[in-house]
Image 1: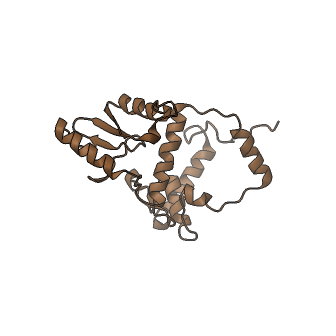
Image 2: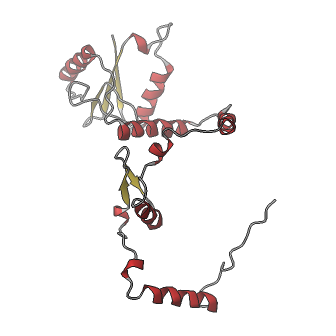
Image 3: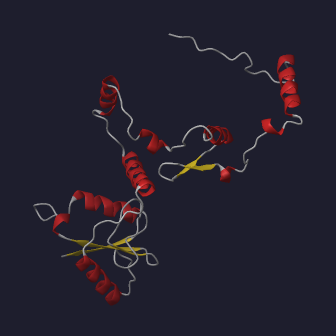
Length: 218
């Protein structure tokens, strides 16, 4: 096993080591009167954002170093976000085999699945644009009628567009009353006529966010 190398200057400061003190003085003198060697980019973390030249999405940096290095590279090469860098990338057979072995039998937690799903939606929005799920115009009319009769103001596909909540797009949402309405068509049920597990799971998730649920079967 390869031994881990320890940096020669670990634990040393300009107060307790003359070599560190000399380096500090040398760097300080080299910056005096030389504006080219000073930090030429914004020190405000809110400015550490660079636009991907492929898809136009924002690349947000958490440190000045990463932001500044990318700005310097932008003069010589095209800046791409992580998603665009992966497009068209080819892997060797050995790499693909290793990736396959890692994923085989791997069980994801609910939180991990949620993060993957939300990440996929965000990538689609950044590369393609807004997401417009399929909808049934008849269901929209039913939502409007129910809303008028029961004092709700639901936003749906034909009334402002479906609202994304936690990566899901309910048929109708009343923001003020925090109420969701779902129109259950045939494809929402299994062969025994029971509501499918994925629909029940989605309802439970949204209810945990504080939303009241109304289901209408058609």
